Image (cartoon, rainbow, N blue to C red; front, side, top):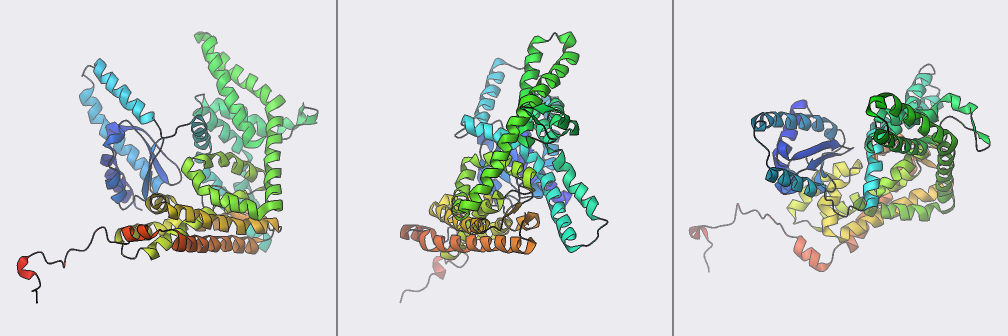
Length: 496
């Protein structure tokens, strides 16, 4: 998509979300433009869904517009620029105007309403904060993961031996310092100084840590990984906030950062690194044991429940687990299994397309959303097709369970493999796959899982996804073609 098209998309979206003055915050993840709104009632959902570039919308803690991978990263800067441009004249015009108590009350009410979220439990809010820490790291994980896969192919084939060390350095550099980035993002998310969070987390990967004994053993660089970095940065935020309250303002610039790094650093070295290391090792051991001993059943459960987890927002709890597994073994064995949920979703959507031949509107939605679904972007199909219909969402989960069981079975048989990065799914996951049994076997098993997911999702939906009443109500054209319908009495057929 060209820059002009990106700007045109942003320009089309802005008035439909209430204009620049209705925007409280702007961010994006892999596929969605996330907007904090001051007044939700100003949003025109139907008009947004009708935009060609918009795959769907999600109303959660932020208003989320699904644009797809790649596109969202290009549209977001244009959207931010348009919002800034739109605010400048308004700010200049309103600057001299006095602010009344009623104005403040109205603004406060709007902000309160914007922050209210559906089912905003403490657990979900906490998981969203965890996701906010790790989601910005996904582009680097993907890039380095693909380079690592390419390096593995060149190494196994014996090609370009002079290039292999360079690719290894490029692929491994980010992962060797990922704890620093996690610490930086954690402090930023929890209200501390980001660079102090990064400084404390950097202790974990410092080579000199190997000279220190804790709990009767030598520490090792990287021990505790991202979990240790997360815990260390959270501690640093609390220490920093305590210092801000008690340290005199004249000494704050010297004392606060020093105490923050010193206290948090000592606790990290003599406590958190060991504890987080034990937790990380337990996660890796449990994942290996789970798939080695009950891979088919575990895959069935994980693949079948992942779509509901996404709907509840609980899938965000898996992000640190994926990252920990990638740190330990170079790939996460869970992601290919969870990706089968998207395969079930695609199969279910194709079945809906076949079962409702007269519903042109729904079939058009499915045709436009299927390419993204094959590439692992499931939101358009979930929110535009299966979830509103109800039963097809359940049968999509059946397809995901079948695909997950297929992949899990091969893990149980000793063919372990996973993804070297998180984020992509569906066909987009192929370049990121790696395993212990060779690239050919890994790709074949993952492709087989997708086929099983597609097939079972299709069959379950085709035969069990509709009641008779649903077929009667839905298998009609909601926008019938009236171009040939005679309306002029003179054109009515004669009654013989």
